[in-house]
Structure formats: C-alpha cells, structure tokens
Length: 461
Image (cartoon, rainbow, N blue to C red; front, side, top):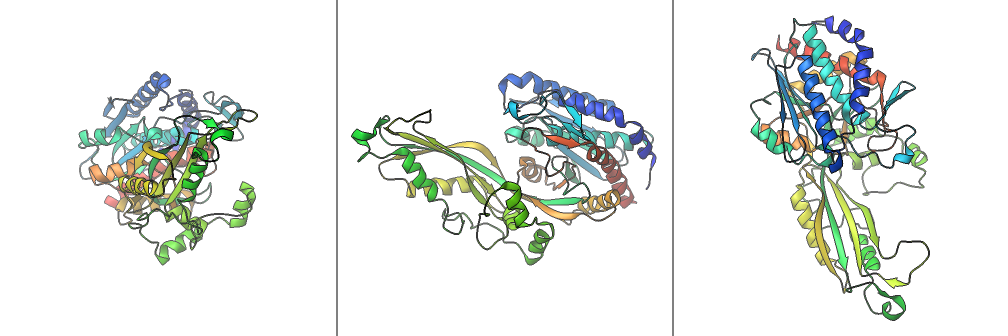
C-alpha cells in the first residue's frame, strides 16, 4: 500500500468515530416533515462543519427552496484523478414509533450494532467517506491521495427535487472523473459487491368518482356504480395472468438481459424456498419467464401501493361508495422514461375506466430515471481492486431494485457515471423500525475510502 499511515490514524480514532455517528444520529433530520425543517438545517450545518474539520478547503452550504446542499472540494493536483462523493443527510420518518425497541433518535449500541433512524440510510455511510478522506490526508502530508469533491443533500428521501439545479449551478466545483455513491451497501459482511444498475421511479394517484355522494346501498346499490368495486376492476386491468404489466407500450424501451447478465443474477440469487420461509408466503409472484432475482434486477414493475374507499370504521355501514383512490408506483429499468410511462398509464386508465365513473390522475412519488453503469470507467476498476484488498477476494456484481435519483442527475448534468461505494448490510431495516448499522462495517468503510484513494493514486503512477 502506498501510504499505510492512514491505518494507524483510523485505528486510533475508532471510539471518536462511533461517538460522532451517535451525535449525528441524534439530529432528527426528517426531510418529509415541515416541522423538522430546523433539524434538517442543523444536520446540514453539522456535516459542513465536519468537512471543514477534516480539512476540505472549500466547503459551502447551498440554500434551496427546501433543504440545503453541502458541497466541498479538496483540490490536490490537477494531474491526479478526482472523485465526487455523493450522499444525503436526511432520513425517513420514524413511524411507527411503537415498533422501535429503543427511541429512534436516541441511538443505542447493542450486539455490535448502532440502532437509530438514519444509521444505515445513510449517516453511517456518510461518515465513512469523511473519515476515510481525513485519514488519507493525515497520511499524505495533510492532503488526500487524490482530488476529492463531495455533495451531500437533504432531500434524497423526497426524491431530490432541488439537486439537479444545484449540480447544474455548481458544475465547476463538482468536476470529477466519476461519482462514488455512499448511499447503499455491500452484498454481505463477508462478500463485497459492485452495484451496476438501479431502477427508476414514477408514481401516480388515481381518483375514481361515481355519484356525487355515498349512497344507501339498499336504495341505489342495484344500479349506481360502486367506486370500491370499480377500483378493483381497474386494478385487475394492470396485469395479465402471467404477471406481466398489461399497459400498452410499457415494455417498448426495456433492455433485455444478456446471457452474461443472467449468469451474474444467478450467481447471487437467494434460494426461492428460503425467501418463502422468511416472508411466510406460499409462493412467489411476478412476470413469467424470469427468476425472482432477474425481476428484481432488470424487469420493470407496477405496484399497487394503496387503495381505499367507502366506510372503514368498526362495524358496518351499508353504503355504495362514491369515491375510491389508488396509489401506484412503477420501478423502471433502462431505457424507460418516467414521463412516458406516466402518460402510458394515463391512456390505460382512460381505456379501462370502469363504466359509470370518472377518473383523475395526479402525481405522488415524483420520478427518477433508471441508471446503468458504464463498466469501462477506470474508477469502477479501481473500486474492484480496493474491495478485493479490503475483503480478500473480488466483489460480485449486483443490481438494485431501489432508486437513487442522483445517479441520473449526475449523468445528465455532469456526464459522470456513479459507482456505489457503501457499507450498509442488506437486512439493516432501512426505512423500517429498528434500523441498524454494524460497527464492524462502519469501521471497514472508513478503511475502504482511504484504500480507494490510494488505489486511484497508484493507478495514476
């Protein structure tokens, strides 16, 4: 290793590092809640100050119409490579609070894990990047082994609505050879991985309206459209009997998996029987002709996230409901376009609109383009080397069913591909009660960032 001094720096600061993680986790930076706006701002200031303490020469808190973006840059030598590290300091809401074993914003250490909202997604990962760069600088006469820029936003959990404009306006500060996403994780504690694709997202809400009010079912139920029944009819129209999305044109832009990509999926696939046992379901469901892993990795989906109508209280109320609502999200794959998919669904709803009803579509979850990595990027190769050094064997390739809107933004605005470099465990309960982050993974991640900077410096010669 070119500069092993960072190993000693990181080893001597482990207790302080964990204490910093607990401190950051205590800030309830829930971006979806307007009442937490001050807390989100506090978290942004904390991250800004920690970057300055690490030694970043140019650190800025960029205001937006919602939550600020923190940008930092540490320019070492124009002849050296530059990585842009991306992450977010906002977190999901903590509800339902009664399912947490300990208070979500009072982080607790149990069995080698830190429990708290935002631990895995992704304050722990954010700190691994800062600590790794700081240690690299300590081992290289006060500067990291290569040039480093960072961008940490406060709106990832609400779809990154402000990020595109910030990236566009500060492109010079963010110039780099590739982006490292600290948002994500590894295949397991013992098996490293490289994530080469992420799904996009488009969400809508459908309102179905029949009569001008709920009606007495004995008087009107025989001849007036029932909105709840109409919702069921419309929902049933979205898939055929083989689990395929039945929206005309939905698959027109989908890139089929190659034989090699199917082999990559099979290499990391979980046994179906294990999944059935873990989830306590009698059988799996989905598009015919593909394995569960292939559906997760590279097949688009249309999911009914919620449906409601009529009386839902205790007991019964004999009404014919006048209104019903359906929430839908689609997970998209290359080269699907979110706006085009929403339009196809709108046409489908109008075509299959239940008789006697009116329908109205509105947006819900925002949108994000799907992302596919160009594996020829030299930073991708360096990550492979660094992970091999860190774990003792090469990483496996994986794709993610989740969405990070920033990946498409960096590609569109900066022409930069994003390579995942994060340490959360796959079962860390992100977005759920009792979210956790393994301390061993946290400490490994700090070493991983320092090691990658060295690897990139070595590749430059």
